[in-house]
Amino acid sequence: MKILINGITIGEGSILPILIKSIYWQKHKYQITIFGPKTLHQEINNYQRFDNFQQLLLKWDKPVTSKFQFIFEALKRNLISISYIPKIKDKYQVIHSISSMLDFIIFPYFLKLYNPRIVWVTVFDNIVPLTDPGNIIIRFLAWVFFNISLIFLKKVDTIFVISTDLKRFLIKHHFQKDKIVVTGNGVDVELLKKAKKDPKIKIDSLYIGRINETKGIYHMLKALKQIVKTYPKFQFAIMGRGDTTSEGQFKNEVKKLNLTNNVQLLGYKRGLEKFSIIKSSKCFWFLSISRSESFGIALMEAVCCNLPAITYDLPIFKKIYKNNEITQCPKGDIDAVVKATFDVLNNKQSRSDTNRKLLHKYSWDKIAQMELKSINKHIETKR
Image (cartoon, rainbow, N blue to C red; front, side, top):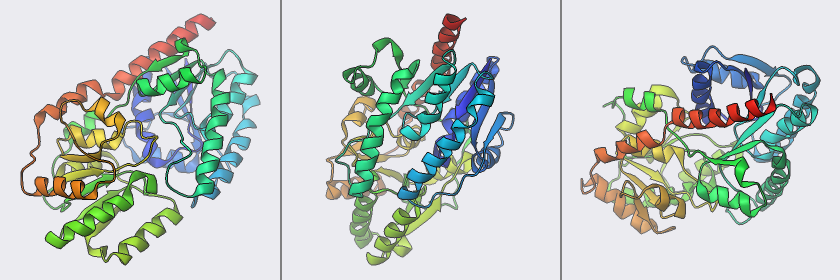
């Protein structure tokens, strides 16, 4: 049996989950083909654990440097991908979308139209509210595209959602209950266990994720500005990237606040290096202010590494972390974030091995098993 993974617009930070799940599926006699541009296949090759997938190359892609450019590039890639359909429509039994955002489901939607027998499954991991911070035009367009995607998703055979809240959202929007499966999210258990602390790494607080206003990056700078008054050498590190515009604005703000010597921009890290950095840091900041925050994989990774984590008290975190695994501050309360950070630095907040219990609950292999069960059910039905 053959599964085609749609990755034509995937970002480097979103690759790992589908690769881990694909290995599980391969062990269960499925052949995996990943559809995407050359840059995606190059990135996959950087993960030495993943070198035996089939590749379907999407041609004529260009690098993305801004949110506006992404809109046009995503549309172009989807139009090109549709031209592949006549040649591949009967080659695969399953098409898997790693996200339900519009740029990930246009191609599967048309593939499903050409071949109704193909099983289309997708992951639904967040909503797009109209009121999040950021560029008004970009936010409005994202909201419009999201609502269009809800129409396209009516053709999906199964939607894997990462929380019961998202399931309720879909049901409210008239999706059939039997099409929705709650799977949750996961962490890379294998690498997390292998990674060791590196004494050469000097990081006091770490954030992993996109350099984006909705992720609270400017709230982190406000907290940092207060902290350096007491700890002038405090080091705040960001593991991740943003588009050219967002990164440029963030760097300018760092300079404006005279925090250049206190901020480390690590870029995107993978594998053992990533988890070594997490384990070597003193605490983790995840100050997302988005209404659409639905899980926070990086936060879960930090918690499972026993790193003291400081967040805002978003409703989703209250449902996931029920045993004081994280410190939740009132949303927007910079003083509370600073105090919680001081508690870590002064050893008033210690690491707890109980956090590792979450590893057994949030495993990509467990999620891959749940997804495969649903896929097999559909394939048997269509025979």
